[in-house]
Length: 277
Image (cartoon, rainbow, N blue to C red; front, side, top):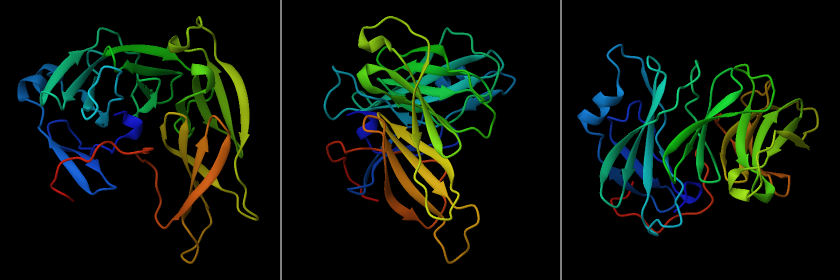
């Protein structure tokens, strides 16, 4: 099952805590064991600069069993500027630690990952590059992003674009800019980022929405539109979905509470084991 079609993993502050893989539709979950102390000790430097990112479900490969899944917990070692991934397999019910050989640029990695072409991407705060983890080979690398303003207030995301390309989204004034480049999976050589399209965002009469990218899965992007001057009698925000293939932005629902981070999914795997939530 792919991460895009899977339920979410609970986000503990540290991979040493208990995690759950949940199916919210059927209200079922699977508990996965905590990471062993010796694996954690190998990833945590003595100076205490390790930073744990959110656990995520890994996209499935062609050779994976239908009902199997993997969970990935990533640790950024600020002292040695390395990254380590802990991988849990439902097949053997064990964790494995994989230390990357790449040298990380200076800076903090965002906790929220993006899924595209079987890879996970984390962006560096205020930087023009991203950490990429190929989940089929469990190898990390750094990719450059299009020239842009990468301050802390900017909204960006990495998505799957048409023709097997990699896409990069950025929210502007009432629009979303889409940049694309050829990707290793589409059989075309390397290419620089190209500005591909400018996608208009929906407008409501008299409302100047403030937009956030909540999450991505494959070619779909979850967006939240906030009314900055709403009162208690009006909705707090509206949830939309952008389809990168059709460029359509469709409203899903009205949210009574704000949403700034989510785990989108498109379908569900075979029912997980009880107990139910």
